[in-house]
Amino acid sequence: MKSLKLRIPSLPDNIRIVESFIDNARERFSFDDDIYGNIMIAVTESVNNAIIHGNKQNKEKNVDLALEVAENNIKFTIRDEGEGFDYHNLPDPTAPENLFKVGGRGIFLIQNLADEVAFADNGRTIMLTFYVAENA
Image 1 (tube, one colour):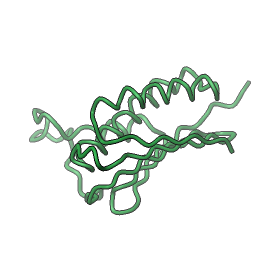
Image 2 (cartoon, rainbow, N blue to C red):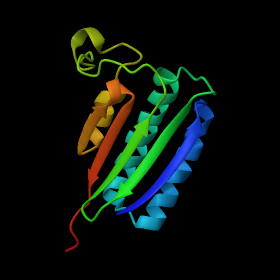
Image 3 (cartoon, one colour):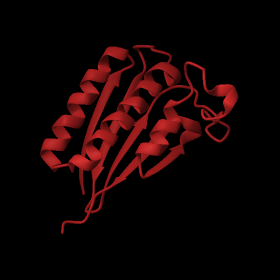
Image 4 (spheres, rainbow, N blue to C red):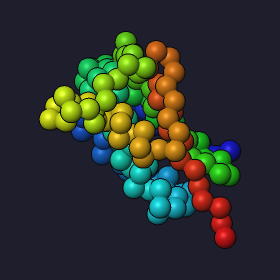
């Protein structure tokens, strides 16, 4: 299994570093165009959530991003140093009372872009799995 790791301080501007990390990984591991967009959006949203909601933009706290490439999937693990959150009871952003709220769509979006989403460590860690299409 091939892997890469990245640690960034919790500053919103560091999303650019994450985008470069994903682009470099795409070149190195030949991500399929079909999943590249989903990966870019889901992973940057996850890191953004870790920076803003998890670590409260405290530059003394880091966000760790790990990538593992297996034969049939690509897995990203994003971990923050915050207090965690109750990922079992998230409001439904498609419910009528939530349609016009400014936030609250990130996890919903991530869950619709990744093939598998799992949380660990009281919500401080999110794992995103993207399946790779078989070569014809």
